[in-house]
Image (cartoon, rainbow, N blue to C red):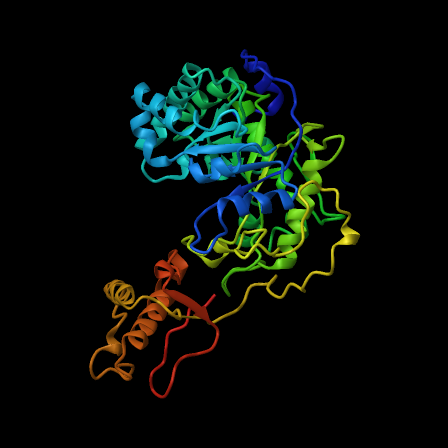
Length: 463
């Protein structure tokens, strides 16, 4: 029997503990996956120039924590994923980690949040899933042992923890984690008065289904587009609220209706590959300015399921990070270029009126590119790495590299870069629709200019 949200509350006998609301104070995620980023001290100045009030780092980098000492920036730091399994069963190790990474900086560095891992429940290794909450308990106990009581412990999760999210009232956690991981996590968060940290990106559902999801609805720009939840009766004016409320209803299903949510990441890419729709400066600036306006609203607006509630947040990310793996969008979520200049002007306090910002460049990729697209070796790519990637590409699929064998139509010119470019394109043309990418560890780049010549025809990926 489908449980509507009213009967659900009747079935829940637990009362979740709520604590005093906190100020919105929009923060920023300081990722470090770049080989050209400013120093920690310069980065702190840049964070302050954006008028951020909080910063989140993905480790316990001592140089960054030192640079944040005696500033007014509240700090969220992280226990790395690879330590979770060991810490989960070893209180001494948890104590040592807190002693080495928190104690030297606290309280002069305003460490307020200690996150255990990052998107752990999206990892393929299930062992770590079941060690997550035990590790969080050990870290919390370690903080207490050291007399640190003002630091909240949490863990940021992705929206893929839900198996159902539409309509929002049908929000349900995945069956493989609901009872075994999420329920104990909610118990921990409730008992310690912490937050459910979650990464919410409207870009990904929109870009995977732009025909059925309106772009303006994803960008907080819709004036007359609404979605009504037939069960709750709530009306939605943007995709972000819809996603957050699906999580709220999922928690309600597990009898935790009042757990506070913290938006651990949100943002929009300002650039991407040819096959990545809508990744442009105009959309990124529009989304981030609008979401900042929402987060800073006074009085708080909350969401339809929780009107008036504060949503504390971290925008992703401080910089475009050039060594992040994956599609090009992953390297283009920054508010700043690595040289410290703005990708587009933004004020995280929300106080700068829209009229003070200059015009944004026109969006040129809000509809899918039809293709074809080719995948070539990137300029400056390491030759030995390219040789390994060539071998890999040729080992995949059906006769992927036959034309670049001696006597083949694409054998000449007989060069590593030429052969690898053919192999990358042939591989991508075969495997793009099942998740293959034109990345090859940063060795490849996309082009819409056909590299074919004479009788040598390069396969292109059709979109």
